[in-house]
Image (cartoon, rainbow, N blue to C red; front, side, top):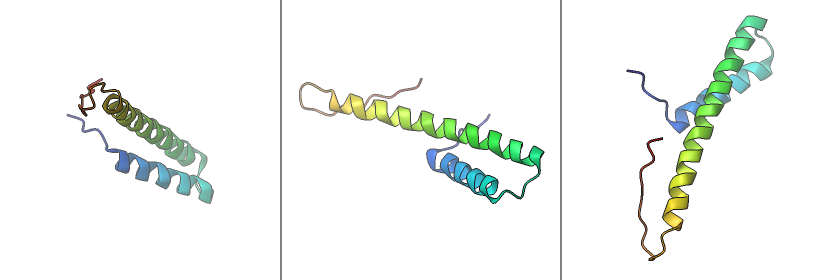
Length: 74
């Protein structure tokens, strides 16, 4: 079973990819590999943030003043 990376882990991977690419001392093939990892990590971060945003919006939309948390398994 493949375990999903958490937001912090994905963000760290993205930051590492950016740092390595900015150094400019990689071969073309290695640069492409690092770039692909960075794009995937950026997408993982975006998905995690979107999920949290949906949860926060749901908490704010309760009409009776209560805070109710719904899970989003999408």
